[in-house]
Image 1: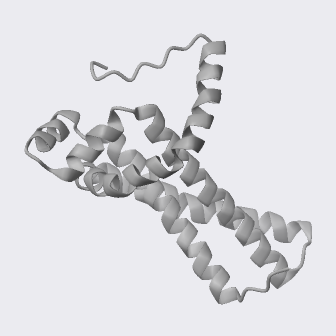
Image 2 (image 1 turned 90 degrees about the horizontal axis):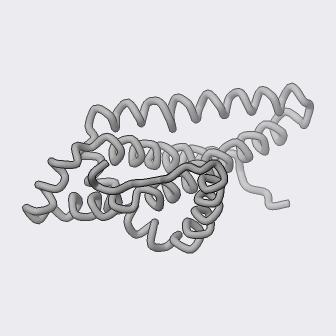
Image 3 (image 1 turned 135 degrees about the vertical axis):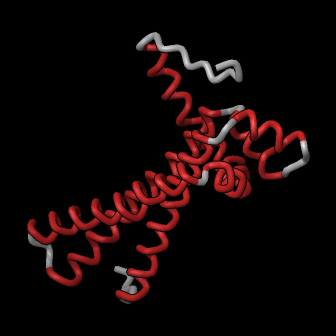
Length: 169
């Protein structure tokens, strides 16, 4: 087993929580940004607005990449907290359960609720900024997103749900 110091494990954990916070901010800010203002800024040549507009034209892919990355970072955080707890205190069930509760608390406060409240309050500024990172991430992860969306569309079809993300909506 790889022996990584506790300091590096905690730094990695903090990094995962920050990554998750970014994707929570991105999701909330892009979903709540004023679309008319965004189009206006894009027409005036704002690069962030142009990217955000492109991303929002493919909402299914946008949400898939955000949720893929957010869930991956949250799952990795939970795994890492479990590893740290077992290394420090042993592998008793109470230790693992406590680690799970601590992880849930950390994710809720630092990676979900606080970032989403901030994003809702500053949606335009954050949506434009997040777009610069999200756009290339979506391009890089597109094969995975495409694969995930095949299953999502299949489930929607089974339940006869039509997903329509047209601009008129």
